[in-house]
Length: 385
Image 1 (cartoon, one colour):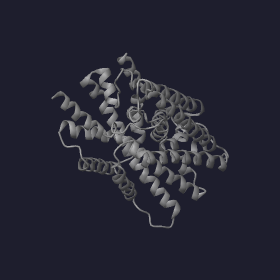
Image 2 (cartoon, rainbow, N blue to C red):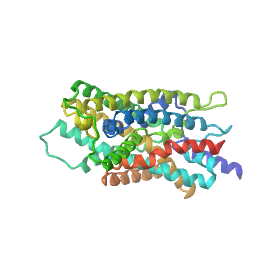
Image 3 (cartoon, one colour):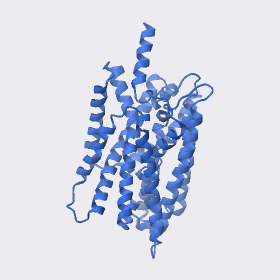
Image 4 (cartoon, rainbow, N blue to C red):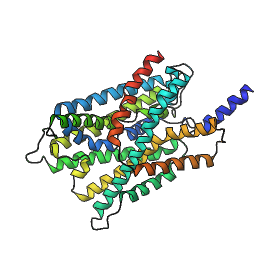
């Protein structure tokens, strides 16, 4: 009886997205992490700098880079800290640290809020970038509502969301990682080519101390949102093969280091050069400030679209895993293609509805994403010792 239950449990795990394929290489870790982290938030970093100023702005960028790299290293190390066991999902590590039930109550709400929230943000961002591409390429065409472009973006995910696991979206993730490097490069190179504006202002954007204070908090939220991705680290590492002689943490960490070098090469030039060129006149999306050359801005917006397509899938995969695990293990539904088709289609459909509500990126990044990536890994290390 016990053997039958174990066999059934293994067959379910072999079907679920996170544990169904463990053949990833170290470079999968690199581009998955780049796709998860270098989101459209990089384009708002010059604006965050304009709210923080030179000193606090650069300090926030460097500290966020160092702290998130350190906490990511902690996550990689904790994946196999118990001999013979792998913590393939964030909530499994939480259960090891805080207990079977408490671990779920602490980790799952935060992780779901972040991942669902990010996907809603990317649904909006993808739609906005598609609209910007349309408006730049065809300025004389009839203006269309943003909701139509969000619908186009969502339609792509109704198809891509049926890909079963992380390794099956590797090509999408790789394309997204390359696109993130491309539009980041376009942002700072085009800014440098434009040249420093005459009478550029580096003072505070707000005219009152209260306004300056709230701008400061908003900027910290924008920086926090830019350094996303920790909530899918364990799930990415779960796709890498592991043995006592060759633990998964070695290729995973190699990929993380490469990813963070790319992150630095994307973030720091965009933030510093963008702020140096435009000062406080920079928009919350630097591509809006860069109106010319039009063909380059159109290309950059299309690169953003391709990137957030991949990012959406990266953040959605752990949610698919939790959803399908709940339906199969809790509600005893048979693991099959029909179940996956319905569950994932409903998820994308709800995101389309949520995406039409509002863009909540800065609010979500400041309140939720920050503790899960900085404080929670440290707590998990202490509780698991």
